[in-house]
Length: 363
Image (cartoon, rainbow, N blue to C red; front, side):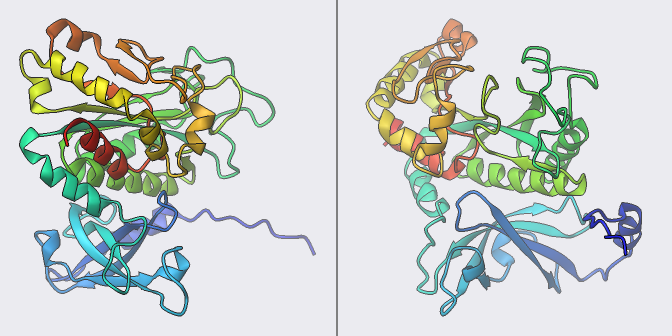
């Protein structure tokens, strides 16, 4: 008897038929999303409500099995979900919602990977300085066999050069995923500001911001969730690994643009230079905070080549993409603006990154 080949693919046309079914006007589905025990992966589950919520504070606190997400023991497994930021659901549409949640242990203390709690406290302390962020999330699209999407199954594509911001089927792989994700973010009012193909083929970037305070982390985490959901629909995988392919290929980062109100105003370049001086004194602490594994992931990426600085040395310069901190050319010419921290890895926690930047430069 011949062995049947298994397939995880489903019929999207049939799925669409069921999604066109209407639901009662007084009901909606709310998907609760949270960060699991890895500090990198998102989880979600859905409940039905008998009303249409207008803000996250109206949503009930819920719970989940933390022993299955690396956040609790089986003998005491309930972990609480506290809704914080609600978005329109771009997948179910209608009155349905998606809400980002904080996680709390049985004793009502934040879980180890609930980094939003301390980030919010820091942003509240610095609110009069109006810290703005813009984060550039790089990622790589993989086929279901974990091979880079569009790459030859045996061998490699041509050398880097023609792929960055490229066009054409021989240079760009996965644009459907990118455009769908972009539209989903706009629909849900995530502050997505752009996207482009990156230097390595099948690698892309989207930008979120400018966002003030805690909104930066909230919007980027939800944009990551949307990206994974869209990729799921196209039967591909998205990885945030900072160096998914060894060798002469660019890694993936989460370059973070930062400014205070003083930096954005006339004469702000002086404030930017003061901030860079503070950053130079805390380089090691930032490197440890800039990936989920205390710098071990960035060790593969921040080598001093492929448009990166060395993780062991701090540097800064105008329009220098090989520096730890870049001052954009236009900001140097205008004497005000923002700085770009190029050290965070693609899988860094945006709450952690934004918090330490504010702690170092503002508090």
